[in-house]
Length: 301
Image (cartoon, rainbow, N blue to C red; front, side, top):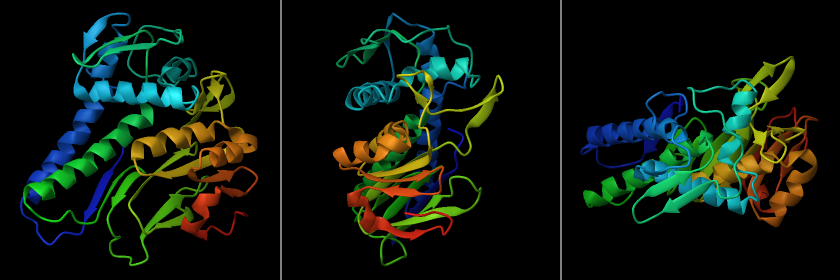
């Protein structure tokens, strides 16, 4: 996942904390080893090389496939792991896999009881793997404290901006304060969101993942309907949700609506969302206003 992992726990006991840290590290390493398209020995690469065959897969890969398929359906195809074909065409290449194209609607078949799948087109899990690791990591921490018969303390788990906050904030009494990166200037905060309740937050941004392809600037947020980089006029989108996986999914789907369509799309789905546009403005959904506590002076509402 190539992202730093940070965790904060406000606990009265440090009993077994070294084991917990070891288990968290092992979890994130396992998710990356299973889902990365940049590691020759990853399970996702292995599956992409065995298209059209029924294969038994790990629980991690099965969960990622099932979630991706559900997200594809619920977003009307805006979240689609098959964009790997377009990413590689545009020069964002992982380890070698067979060249493929978008398959028909039935790109994934599953046998839940036996954990078998038949994949009919190559897939890339991108940010969904990171958000799954954050979700599983928060559950691991929760189970750890339940096992030692301690109340589950307030906690924050952050993997490169995909974060899960549980319980009362630490140490800020007003709530968890989350700085959203400036969409253009490195190492600056664009806005601050404050959450008095448990919440997960993810941001989709093009500040880092941009490159030149045949003289044209492109980025990694591909619109599956056009097979080209999408989100015209949008610099970044942040979504808060109860689960980091769905914050990740909806941030990507919103980004691809572009500046002209994002507000209507987000409002209809009653999402907590904030976005920066390339004309120096900030958009906020109705239900998300209460969480916006500071905005960089370079931007206008």
